[in-house]
Image 1 (cartoon, rainbow, N blue to C red):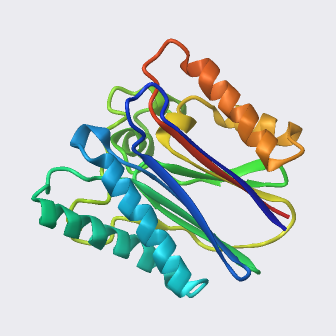
Image 2: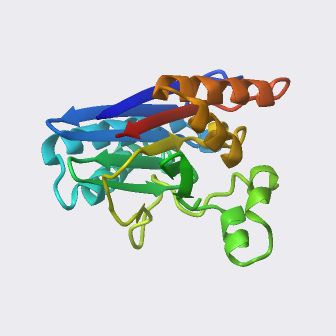
Length: 241
């Protein structure tokens, strides 16, 4: 059984540059989340194109072997084409996360600093690694992972959609089999910056439904972001049992 909950909020910003989407094709589910880069302008256009292309390609390809690759490359092509048409090569940048749940296995991929968290039997197994300067500093042993949230270069991304790629910028995870109770959380940085992993896990253990899990996490996001210029925040939570 697959259950899910999706939210996308503006926060304190004038527009929402995040975009989310899902599609079911027979026994396969596709979940998608993108966060447009506001500092570059027209981020909401880039994120919308990425999600529209993801859904379109998933509708066509379903659970095919190369569907994730097609999703990211079609989204990138769509954004670059829109840039060329509007003469906006310096704008329209976005992250993208994609999670595909099939009858037997689960696959995912990402580019940028929107994250996918993976939980097995209420325990955090891992997450995607941000394509950002602070994540690179963690890999080099210069800062701790917990310091990413408040690092001054937090918003400096090394890989995004909307910039010409010499080689694929997206990263695909190894597939995992469907087994036991699995939970996934796709979220933009406006969400994960305000909810720590230990809090996600504690609330997951308490929640009786995926809706409750998201509601409880959003309560923390609002509480921790109170009095600040809150970013857009979005989340797609998926339970597989």
